[in-house]
Amino acid sequence: MTEVRIRRGLMFWLVAAKDVVLLYFYTLFVFLESFFQSVFPPRLKSLKDEIILVTGSASGIGRMICLELASTGAKLVCWDINKWDNDGLVKELRNLGATAYGYEVDVSDRQKVRTAAEQVKTDVGDITMIINNAGIMPCHSFLSHNPKEISRAFEVNVLSQMWVVREFLPRMIERKCGHIVAICSMAGLIGSRNLSVYSSTKFAVNGFMEALQDELAHLPEGLHIKFTTVYPTSCDTSFSKNIVHTRRDPQLVAKKTVEGIRRNKESICIPPTIVIFGFFLKSLPSKVFHAGRELMGIYSEPRPAATR
Ligand SMILES: NC(=O)c1ccc[n+]([C@@H]2O[C@H](COP(=O)([O-])OP(=O)(O)OC[C@H]3O[C@@H](n4cnc5c(N)ncnc54)[C@H](O)[C@@H]3O)[C@@H](O)[C@H]2O)c1
Image 1 (tube, rainbow, N blue to C red):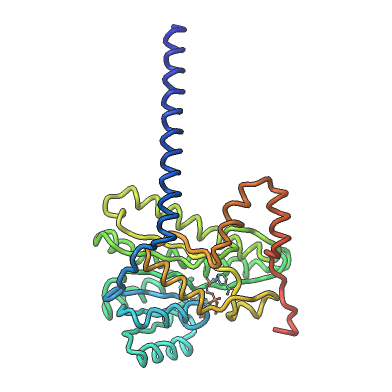
Image 2 (image 1 turned 90 degrees about the vertical axis):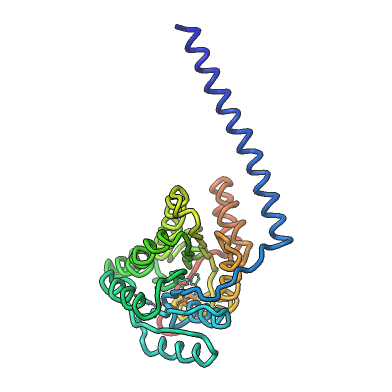
C-alpha cells in the first residue's frame, strides 16, 4: 500500500517537473519569437473587402480609426449615438474615396444593436471585423458617482461590447474567420483614484476579451478568429474635458491601432512602456507598485466644472 502511494507521489512530481521544463522552454521560445518580431515585424495584412464595424465612430479615437482605415479598401460601417457628427464623418470618408455607411445606434441598448445589425447585414453584408470603441468616462471619487452613472458606464463600456459581439460572432464562427478588437485603456490594467467606475468597466473589457479568446481557441471553427485589445493612455479627445492630464494625439492612437490590427497583434499598448506598469510592476510587491504609480503620475484628477 505504502509502496503504491510512494510510486504515485513520485509519478506526480515527475509529471509536474516535466510540465515546468516544457513551460520554461516554451516561454523562452515565445520571448525569442517576440524579440524577432520586434526586429522583423510580420507583414501588414490587407483589409481590402473587409467589412469593418467601428462603434463610437463620430468623434475622438473612433473617428481617427475610421479615417486611418479610409485608404485600405475596407467597407466601413460607422455606429454612433451622435447622428450629426457621424453623418459628417461618413461624408468625409466618402469624399476620401472610401465606402462608408453610417447608422445612429445606442450600443448600450441590446434591441437597437439587434435592429441595426440586421440592417447592416441587408445593406452591406457580414461584418468581418468589429472595433468596439464607444465609451464614456466618469472621472471623480467613487462616492460622488450616482448609481445611474455607474450603471450607464457598465452599459456603454462593457455590455455594449457583448451585444455587438453576440450579433456578429456566429457568422464569424461559421465562416471560420473574423477579427474582434476592443479599445480598452491603461485604466483596464491599473486602477487609480477618481476612476474606480471607469477602471472597473475597462478591467471587465479586458476579462471579456481574454476569456472569449480562450473559449474560441478551443473550437476548431473559432481558432481562426483574431483578437486585439488596445490599451491607450490618456489622449486629447472629448474625454479630456473631464480630467486635468491629457497628452496623446488620438490620431497617433488610431495609427498604432490600425497598424497593430493589421499585424494581428493580441495587445497594443500606447505607449509601449505601459507594458512595464501594467504587467511587470504588478508582479512586484504591492508597495513597489503603488510607489511606481505615484512616481509616474498614473492617476487622473477631475477638471473643475468651471473650466470644462
Ligand atoms: N481619450 C482617452 O484618454 C482614452 C484613453 C484610453 C482609452 N480610451 C477609450 O477610447 C474609446 C473612445 O474614446 P474617445 O476618447 O475617443 O472619446 P470620445 O468621447 O471622443 O468618443 C466616444 C464616442 O462614443 C460615442 N458614444 C458614447 N456613448 C455611446 C453609445 N451609447 N452608443 C453609441 N455611441 C456612443 C460618442 O458619441 C463618441 O462619438 C473609449 O472606449 C475610451 O474608453 C480613451
